[in-house]
Length: 172
Ligand code: AR6
Image (cartoon, rainbow, N blue to C red; front, side, top):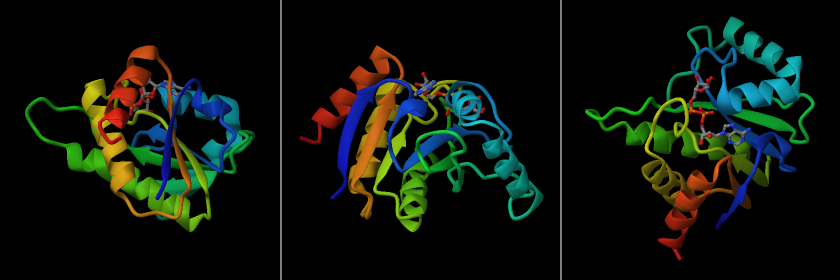
């Protein structure tokens, strides 16, 4: 079974095989994790994203799906882009958020990645309440059969880190 670890820090600094990006459907960059990954990873990542948009993903990456590119200058070998759902108070979009983690693990396994760093997908610009985002993230990764050995959640701020600690504690 996959080992879930939690660290507070910057996802771009992780020494892992693959880093998951909280992207948007355009795959052409943005703020938050997405901005940090492109800034630190360099232009090779954007070039790979543009190539995907010019080919198989002409309409963009659908919400809940995952696709891999080079990690450019990051220590990681791969970036796995996922598109989280925007939080809605009136519609239950949690299956789309679960799907991000399931699909990212599927792609990681296909790449032979043994260690994968995840951000708190949807818990920033997309407005998902952090406690719920943490429960879904941890619960989904623990419930997904995978050859990935380590799923490392990298949480930027203390409140999100605490929410993940609580969520993980509920599984122990
Ligand atoms: N390392 C780890 N976590 C980070 C980092 C970092 N370097 N920077 C921010 N976070 P967000 P979303 C945290 O907004 O909600 C982008 O513009 C952040 O504090 O990156 O899925 C995309 O292009 C929060 O807890 O992702 C999309 O348009 C978590 O990562 C949109 O934002 C996720 O915040 C996606 O929004």
